[in-house]
Image (cartoon, rainbow, N blue to C red; front, side):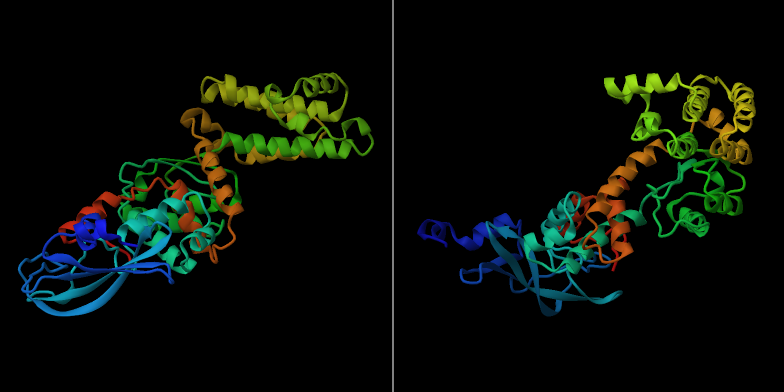
Length: 412
């Protein structure tokens, strides 16, 4: 593997430079095991070398003893690469005996920092199970790498300026299992850990889920609750489709027209637009429900303020409860029961549109969920993909190169 020209420059010096190893450390030897497909680099330190305490940074400490440790590094071409180091332990008068930090290492993971960074980047676009096959490591070890950095970034996430929150089945700043009222209580408990007082949350956008409503009443009673307009229109669409399904039992013309009524007209093809135009002009119950939907959408578009919206919605409600379309009447009563939160939209203009965009990311992750093993792994991936976490590899690199004390808490 190492020909005469490489030997002229010393493969030990070459790999020491590649690993950015500095005195008193040096590469003692390099072994290439062709049959095993592995490259092994052995690092040692000079006689008489002294090191820093890995806890407080006190310099010039003598070596108490050493422990042989091994790290998996990035592949050397197609071959696995490992770093072996007779790792010193220092004895600090204040903190006792501790292993020294190394310039290439993660935090006791058995992998180098560059290998961990590589895994984390792959995890954003590939299932962990596939990455495990690619790098020939057990997926449990890779989950530990991803979880370590996600947890570290979450611990220092700062929400001190957060005042408005959107709730959905997935959340950007906080994710938890379940959809009942207790999830709101868990969210409230999490806020002080990130420099955010629950009382500073003035506005919350969510759907009309009874669980969310109960949780918010118990935990954020002071906040203005806005019921997401997209959820309101979604419920109207569901009522419209119930009318269509019932009517089509005796009207074959309505079969296979579901999406014509549900999609916005500008998104329909020319043929479907023509079909919709002919159906709208009929005396069908579905056409009547469709017109109610359009009028509701127009209120959201045209109301200038909460007072305008209240007047328009009162007229719409009166029409809806007299329309003799039972699904629409039931929806109208749901609106009346949530009247204040619906009207609050016209003050706050809050929606869950951003969360819906995040949901598409999460659902894509769910589609490749084989190999997640448990819900905690799935939550970890949600945070990685949609949490906008500050995972600062440059910080970790500088920390390990300088042998300093970390400023961020590293998860165990």
